[in-house]
Image (cartoon, rainbow over all chains, first blue to last red; front, side, top):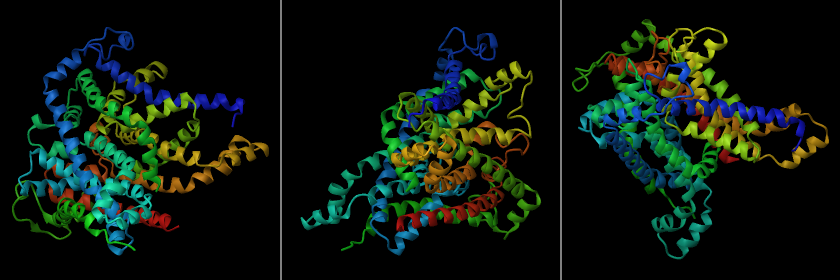
Length: 272
Length: 286
């Protein structure tokens, strides 16, 4: 497909998308490096003296604490999600019994329910269990939010593991847990890595549960802190953009490491 | 020989029964009761369908439904069409195309609260877009501050975030087309437009069905961009069903009303879920 006269249109279109997606992000990084008085000065929109002032100011507001809280919530939730979703996805992939079909249907419904609908009753349920304002409460809430999604994303990976491999191992005398653990899991590791990465990324950005289940803003993760500050009056833009950049950096690193995996894995999960 | 693997599903069943199914039942019960912040942990007075009747008579449910439908329509049309165009333009294996795709998917992977904050700033009165619009048409556009624009602005931002993911899925479908078909089309003298219309679009149709449903659902349940960019305002201009249910419960502390609105949203989602589930099962049987 090398018809040179069409080349121009393609490159033009590609450049359009590059500008639409890259410019906003570059602009934000630039803004985060400006003095707050320079932010809306159009003579200083591109040429200005960079400063880390905004970052220093955000650093005052318990930034490290929030970063740590984000890391804790995201890793604990991801671990809990994988712990329950991996075996469940395997069970569903290997069965076409009524319970399997019913469970899948229920999972699809729960995956689609707006989070604003679940935050209301969870507030009450976690309150009754004395889990409000605690790390455990938010982790449990995030994990139960992500589990249906994770099972649905994982299931096709287990379906593509041939049953013959398992039968061979059970002929060798392995029990069903052992053949799952030592035969099926290694084959499905790409799917598990993809799912783990996506769950981590989504939980990292989750803020609705954190904002409502933590009673003390000192316990907020980065995402909740950002959500709270952006929606308050009298926004300090350079500080806010610095906070946005800080929130995005860990995702950028994770993304750089896992891009290839995500590109393959997401398209499998989404269409099948 | 088929072994029963039900036991493997038990941990997930326990977690979801306690923290998804039970809360959902509580939501329904709450929607049929009068619940405020004071009575949240006490006894709820059963009021039947009164919360729903109030939501309809004070306009919040029909208005929210209307806004949700407009929002979903914009996000879905822009998201699916934009995703297809991006996928077609970026289907090549060249370095430039790969870099553009990687940047786009990175933006999609960023937390919605980050993307929302970024756009709240870009669309502000003195933001980048108004900088451009003032120097070209000499006017400031109240993207997020006017009744007429706010919903559309947020919807376009949401579509902008969804396009890279849709492009990724469409691209995989386009790359799955046999190269020989394209070569035959070139030999037959097909134009680029004909190639898209008669080869590419029919080939991506199965993927686009699923993708359209997913985009509809994503748009329908979306609240994060509204939360960050407009908080439901100005006035009630962006009080879609999901956002309205949240603000009734956690801003006005009327948990009964919020639950009723939430139940309406859930019921509509169930309809979409059934369509999606039927599609999944049908595809697996074939």
